[in-house]
Length: 290
Image (cartoon, rainbow, N blue to C red; front, top):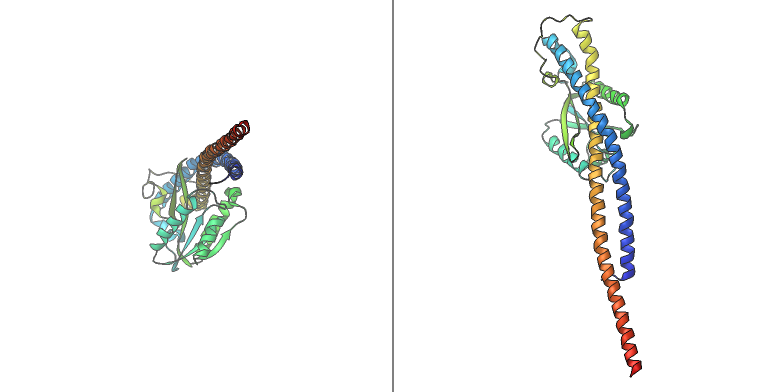
């Protein structure tokens, strides 16, 4: 069994770890609130623009098929954009994402190439020998705003427009609650009319549009795609910090439990030492008295 000095050092070491995990929990909680507010605030806008694009698509009807982004590309590959964390210590957040990625990839009949946002997924894909055509590292994931999301969306649209890919999918994590975050894979391009809402194929009277429905539609579709990317980034960031907060809280609780156990052992060892010393003193005094 460890000695008193070693136990004292272990208690101090666990206490230092507890301070670190508690500080990381507090930081994660603060950032979680910020990203959660942004994610929740962006959802109504995403729903409204999807609904508007859907209603305009309903006005266009069969004309949608004439647009390239509504048809599968001629390529024999799939481009997949994956969003992970830049850092670890966030529980099973990345592991769940990688499990979803592997499950999805096994179902693909075509070759898959990847565009990554987040150091963890980039390292994982390269370690598995997968093809990473681009890794977006600037700006860091936490500092990406709507303008950066629009650039990413434009890159995906341009890649699809080259004809090298039959489709483009995006993968990230949806924030459901403080304790639930679900990895998601969704088709980004070509746009499926069914993803635009119930307005597709339905005409609500004879609306008068100025400019024409086609012109408005062509302007709104890029915003719709940009919003998809921006929401995915926000949801993934929120999920990451919710998972990190939960992991650091569990680590802090575990450190508290370990420290309590070590202190109990330490106190017993110290009491045993004191008792032994007292017995030696009493025995020595009795021997002298004789």
